[in-house]
Length: 286
Ligand code: HEC
Image 1 (spheres, rainbow, N blue to C red):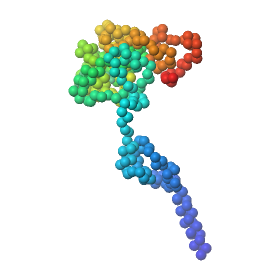
Image 2: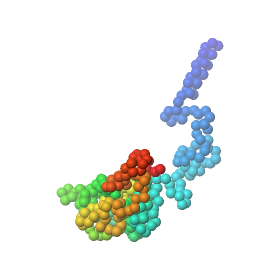
Image 3: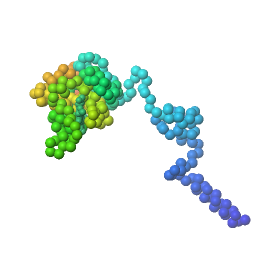
Image 4: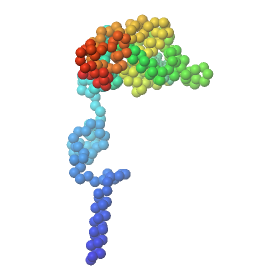
């Protein structure tokens, strides 16, 4: 009888130990009061259906968990709205000082017809030409484009060099009149989708970066034609708006580093404002 008891105690102890074992491997472990661990409320972007959710089946839950399109007429955080003005200066003004690294919807498909439409409709660079934008554009161009299109845009990059270049197709020569005259949409569409053997760069370059690369390519074209395309002057086309030529509504605010503090004569001193002027660039909006 005594040994019976001991065996029973042993079994009970073993059972207790095992039942308290933590979850590992495929064993989820035990949950007491699972509804305290797992909210049965709506949880966004959670794909695993949970059996204690009693208000719908696996499919409902999947549907609710999927990202949804924004409410009509709203712009999600991190997205930039497009200015609809026909006046390039007004458009550039709209974008001054807005820190926009977020994505912006692109309403053109990857097809020839849509490419033509983009070329006809996208005629403005939403960002003014700034020194910071050009230098960021240069850096990005040299990383992502110059291997094929050449450091100076002539289409003679490293991959297509005469001695050992193996690239199967001729990259566009941006210095040709055809490309100097081409609208901004031709560049933007190519960056989004690529063209033939050229792949797209939509996932590599943010909205602002794409436009800075385009500014930089315009700068290369201007250099070739001995014209100006910079933050002070643009004699290449009527599209790019030099930063120095637009009214600076944002003077009293702290603003985005890329747009400010690199323009001669633009520095505003603390004394001038008579208040504690915060130079932290992290928080661009007050
Ligand atoms: C791996 C090589 C390669 C890289 C890198 C590359 N391209 Fe291209 N690109 C090409 C080739 C090849 C073509 C010609 C495609 C055709 O017309 O068949 C081309 C064409 C273009 C065109 C002209 C499209 C048209 O409408 O005719 C533009 C604009 C362009 N590239 C921009 C860029 C930009 C901007 C970058 C960098 C973000 C870039 N490319 C990076 C190979 C490249």
